[in-house]
Length: 162
Image (cartoon, rainbow, N blue to C red; front, side, top):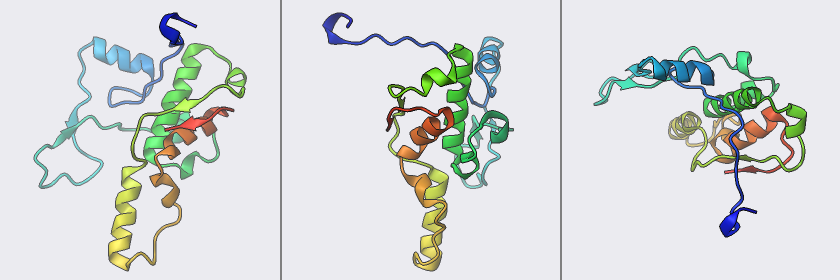
């Protein structure tokens, strides 16, 4: 153990999915060249909003980045997180088999799951008094769904912590 009882952590790989690119190298190169990832909002109707610009991830195709057959059922945030985590593993050169050992953990600091799923469920509740909620959306609202998606994507054997 390191001094003061703290364990040391080593960052071995970088993964990124952002408005500047879909891998760490693209994001780093865009930052170095002074590119902005901010543009007019396209993912939803921003009419009436005070701010009309955002750093949206555009052109993200989950099938290009993810291997898990469960990935199409995950929410967008979980897909983005799992793709970034897969990119970090590839960038690190660590074998995926090594990560499948019991001690490898997925840990994310978030207080909610998929906001878009929550919005759709809320609309369904208001429109139908809760009788017609889409059962595929319910698991996406759990804050643990994001770290769980990373664990599933990378076949991690340890806990998925939020």
